[in-house]
Each structure stands twice: as structure tokens, then as C-alpha cells.
Image 1 (cartoon, rainbow, N blue to C red):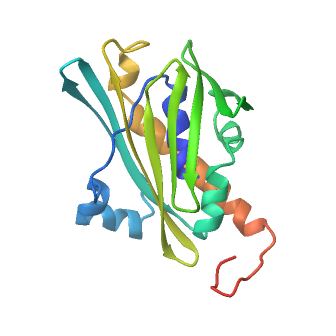
Image 2: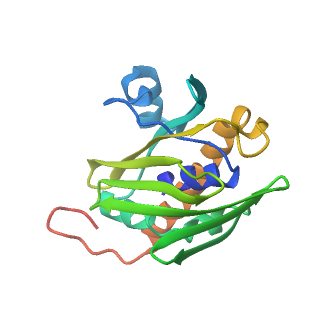
Amino acid sequence: MIWASLFVMLFSYAGKALEQAPAVPFWKSNEKIYRRIQEERAIVVAVHTNPIPSGETLVINGGGQISTPITFAFKEALNFDNLKEVSDYVKEVRSENGQLFFRSKAYGYEAAMWLKITSTPSSSIHFEVVRGTLKGLKGDLHFDKISSFKTEIGISGQYDYVKFPIAKIFAEFGIEVVLQRMAIRLRSLIEERYRSGPKVVKANGER
């Protein structure tokens, strides 16, 4: 799922952050950008840093569409093992004492963190790092039904810091490209899984 892709690459590079998006995120309110998402299947990710009195806030906002029903996209978003299939940076993913443990490594830097994850059925997933490298990072994945077989997924959140926990270059360069590529790989994996899986047609037309 796109959401998960974004959020774990975030972890893999040990230091990105997401910000709560406005009611209508930039990628949806900008007609040209949204047309690319609709017509060209673009996945859009924007990363920037904002100053705050106590330091800085690292911000990531993004979105895209996937060709599966919302129920399938949401279920796959909660299957964190997907992340290990599309990225060599993700070394370990497991449940531990009611939390999700992630360990990732990239360019000689390693991140380990414990996340608290809550969700509302088929509409949103909230995550917060409660221990580890990016303690305090929090964000949300938003799911919207576009049609019976198409779902829109957006991500938003933030990470406030005084001193960035690893080399600052990872927060300033290349994140957008890395997250976008990760999201594309995950989307392909999930769409292929949906196409090749058993199809059960429900009364509302979803499978």
C-alpha cells in the first residue's frame, strides 16, 4: 500500500517527518497535479523543513491512487510484511508487546523504533513512534474510495526536532524520489496481488 511504503522509507532513512495536512492537501487542490494523479497514475510526494521556536519540523505530504477496492487497499496497508518485499533497507518488522517494531538500514545508518498504530475501519491509519530513533514522529494515512476498484491514499504528519538524529543530508536531499519509488513498487505489488487473488464479487460491486 502506498501509505505504508511512504512511511517505512521514511524510517529507512531514519529521519523524515510528516505534517498534518490541511483539509484539502496541496496535491489534490492543485488542478494540474491532481490531473497527473488521475490520468498518469502519478504518485506525488513533497518534503520540506519549517523552523519552529524549539528547532525545526520536517514535513512530508503526498498522495496517489491504487487500482484496488478500498477494503483491499486498507487490508494490505496493515500488512507490514509487504515492506520487506519491496525494499532491501527494511531489515526487520514484527509485533512486540502490542507495538510494531521496525529496524532498517541505509547508507551505513541504522534505525530501530517502536510504533503505536491505531486505525478506523477502511478510512485511516494513525502511527506514532513511541520509542527509538524518531521518537515523537506521528502521522496519518487517509483512504478514500474513488470507485469500486480504485482508492486514493494520502499521507501527512510531522516530526519536530532540535537536532536531527542522523546525518542531516537525509532530511534535505533525495527523500521525495526515494519515497516515490518505494510507493510505486508497493502499488505494483498490491495491484498484482489483487489481480491474481481469488475474486469474490460483493453486492456493492467490490471484490
